[in-house]
Amino acid sequence: MKKQLLISLVTALAFASSARAEVKPNALFSDNAVLQQNASVPVWGTAKEGEKVTVTLDGQAETTVAKGGKWMVRLKPHKAGGPFTLTIAGENTVTVNNVLVGEVWVCSGQSNMAFGFAGCANAATETPLANYPKLRRFYVNNGGALTPQTELQKGEWVECSPATVGGFSAVGYFFGRDIHKATGAPVGMIHSSVGGTPAQAWTSLAGLEKDPELHGYVEAVRKMEADRDAAAAKYPQELAAFPAKLKEWEETVEKPYQQALKDWKSETEKSKAAGKPLPPMPKPATPKPWPPALPGLVNARAGFPATLFNGKIAPLIPYAIKGVIWYQGESNSGAGKEYRTLFLRMISDWREKWGEGDFPFLFVQIAPCNRMMPELREAQFLTWKKTPNTAMAVTTDVGEANDIHPKQKEPVGARLALAARALAYGEKIEYSGPEYDSFKVDQNRVVLSFKHVGGGLVAKDGPLKGFTIAGPPPPPSRGAVHPSIFVPAKAEIKGDTVVVSSDQVPLPVAVRYGWTDVPDGNLWNKEGLPASPFRTDP
Image (tube, rainbow, N blue to C red):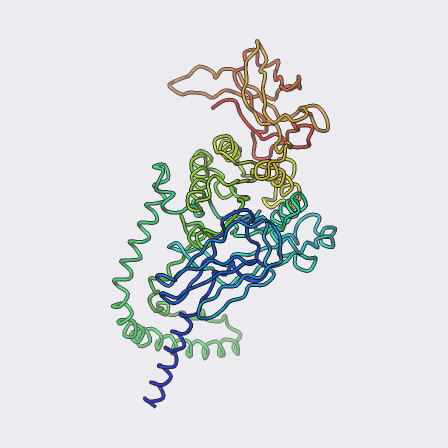
C-alpha cells in the first residue's frame, strides 16, 4: 500500500512538473482573439525557468527566455487584417487560430455595462441583424481579489452572431458595432464589469494612496490585512482545538437535544390523540460549531477597495488596447463631492498601469432615476472637463425614473462611438451635446454660454424647460446661513447662448439646469445630442 502511494505521489509530481514546463499564454491569447492594430503588442504567459519562447504572427517572430516562470515578447505594429495564426513555441507549441488585428476596447463598470443585449429594448429587431464575425467579445470571469492577479480564469473570444449576441454587453455591442462600421476594422471588446460596485473597488491600492482624500479606503484595506494576519496566526490552534470543541458540543448539547426531541415527539402524539394544544418543539441550546475559516479565503467583497482592480483589471494589463468605455457611478451616488477626486484618480490609475499614455477613456453619465443625485452627474461632468482625452455620453433622455437599468442601450453605445470616432479616430464630427461653459448676469437675466453647440442649440419638442434661477441668499438669522432659493425659470435660445430669467428674481446670481434626480430638460444641439445637467453656483 505504501509503495503504491509512493508511486502515485511520484507520478503526480512528475505530471505537475511537466505541466509547469509547458509554455502557456495568457487566456486573452486564445482562438478568435483580436489584437490592437498599429501598436506594439505584448504577448505573455508562463513557462519553465530559462525556457526559450518564440511567438510568431504573420511572418514576424519574436523570441525571449522565461524568467521567474514568466515570459513576454512585443510584436511590432501590424495593420488591421486577418485571420492569422498566432503560434507560441517552447518545449511545446500552442497554436491560436482565427486571430484578427483591429481595434481593442475594454468595456467596464457596473450593472448598466453588464446589462446583456438580450434585455435591451430593441433586442428582438436587432438580434437577426447582429451578424458581425469581425466583432468579438472576451468576458473576464475573474472575481475580486485581495492582491493584484496576473492570471485570468478560463475565458474565450466569441464572434458576434445572432446566436451569440444575447450574451454581449448591450452597450458594448452597440458601441463595437458602430466602431466596426465606421472604421471597417475588426473590433474586440474585453468585457469586465460587476453590478452594484463603486469606483474605489476598481482603483488600485497604489492609486488610492496617491490622494489624501482617499486614504480612508487605504486604511480599510490595511485593517483588513491586519485582521487577516491575526486570524492566520490563530488558525492552527483553532483548527487543532476544533475536534474537542465539537465533541463537547455533541455531549453537552446534541445528546440532550436528541432526547428532548424524542420526548417532544411522544408528547406531540399524546396531545394530538387527546385533542390538546401541541407542545413547542425544542431547540439546541447552542448552534453546532463550524470549523474555523481558512484566513487566506477572506471574501473579496465586490465593493471593497481595490479588489475589482486586482481581480478583473490587473490581469488584462498590458494587453494592447485602443481605449476604455465605462458605465458606472450609481453605487457612488450620494458621494458626489468625493467622486470628483475618486473618478479622476481611477482614470489616471488605469492609464499609469497600462503605460500607453492618455488613451481614450469614454464614460456614460448616470441616467435619470430616483436616488441618482445631481451632484454625481456634476462630478462626472467635471471629470470630463478636467481630464484630457475623455468624453461623456449624456443619457438624460433614455432613463427610467423607477428603474436604474434603462433598456434603451443603443443610444448610449452610439454616443460613446461618436466620441471614439472623434477622439480616437480623428473624425471631424460633433460628439457631445451642449457643454455649459460660462455665464454672465445682464440686469435681471442670466446669459449662459456653451461649447459643443454644433450646428446650433435647439429646444427639443417645445419651449426650453428644466431651468431654475435664484437670487442672493437671504441674510443669516441667529447664526444660520440660508441657501439661495431656486424657482422655475423662463429660458430662451439666443444664437449660441441661453437667456434665463424669472419675474420672481429681479437680481439673479445663479442658474441650474436639470438639477434633480430625474432631470426633465430639452436643451440639445442640431446634431441630436442632449446637454448635460449643470449649475453655475459652486
